[in-house]
Image 1: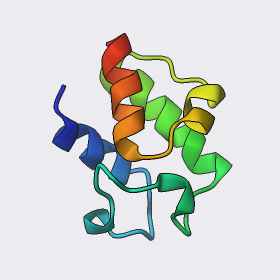
Image 2: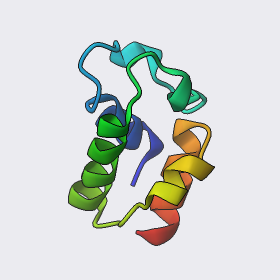
Image 3: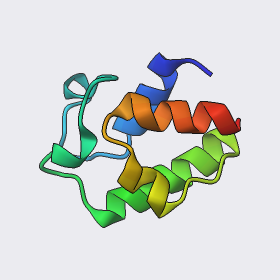
Image 4: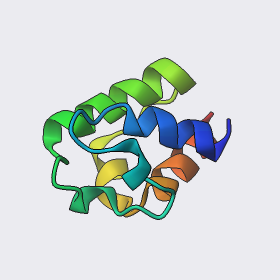
Length: 76
């Protein structure tokens, strides 16, 4: 699993946010479009793409997209 691929998959969960705005260092909870619905989409994406179960605590504890990537990678 590559960080670049994870960022692309993460960015696909957003409809109104340009994917170029999302990088490894993006603090995703500060994005205008971030919501609990997108959090659920990210959880579903991690399950479908990487067969990894993310929990709400994982998302609450992560700050950047790379933090989430590291959680998923450690469980893959």
